[in-house]
Length: 356
Ligand SMILES: *Cc1c(COP(=O)(O)O)cnc(C)c1O
Image (cartoon, rainbow, N blue to C red; front, side):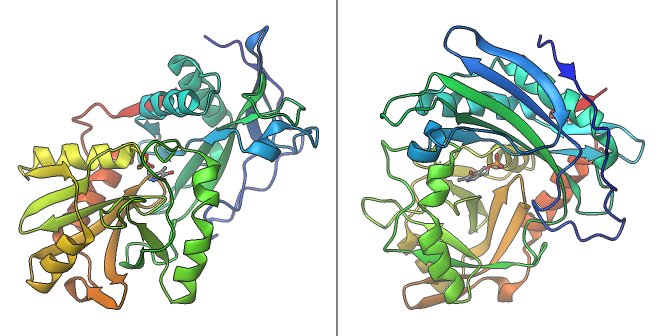
């Protein structure tokens, strides 16, 4: 149990207007959670304070060698006024896995969830309720030791900020166009691809710019060794429905183990689909598209929940999926996941955690 000191913001901001589009990640609430780590004291001084800049030495190790991690989850307000979190224990577990990979100190799962709950409770008026909106929660850890040598730091800060958000992609549930990247790579087996860390995103920007220039909004990564097997979309995991079977790349160490991915697999099992987690080559996808068995393609992630894919471009080949329309399974997954998250559908998996 954390002993969290609370300093309320004496100058609360004006809440966003009901019709504010809430462009993803642009508005922040009145408070933030922060706690410090030193090798001697461990995690200490947990506090909730007014949202504000943080002061770090220019030599803080995070700026130089990128030792940092982050998480992303959402809080929702149900029609009957409950505040709900979606599987926060999974984010806590993944935080500790990422910390292990990056040689950072982990956080006890209960403390991680407690900090989120306390902060969300204080800023609960910021949870938007319009369709497709939620309160995005961004926990992160940074290395703060002032030192220019390369080694794991011995001082860290764990911070949580909150942002009321609308849809992640301006397209909303409209299918996105995806560029399959065959030159640049995001991560390789044995690297840090399964860690939720900024470095993987830094590695993704160049290909993303290339894709944007070609009129595609996202990049689908291929494996770093053969440039042949499908990995993920860089902020989403990817699923294919081929001839009635749901197929997604297995967790191989270079892709992020998505919580939405796990939830989608469980829902598909529940509905009687065969789900295969395995190697899937781009040639197989191309063949399936050619012979008409590629029925659906969609991305999964906290930010967008389900993101149908309408077009894939691989080298000179353009694959249009379902005439660019949303598939039945994609729509059903979106409706059920968001229904459970908003408390409109029964939580039969025990995924939702109420903030009281
Ligand atoms: C966060 C993230 C995902 C999606 O994970 P969720 O837990 O479903 O939000 C997928 N890929 C990468 C690289 C990510 O950082």
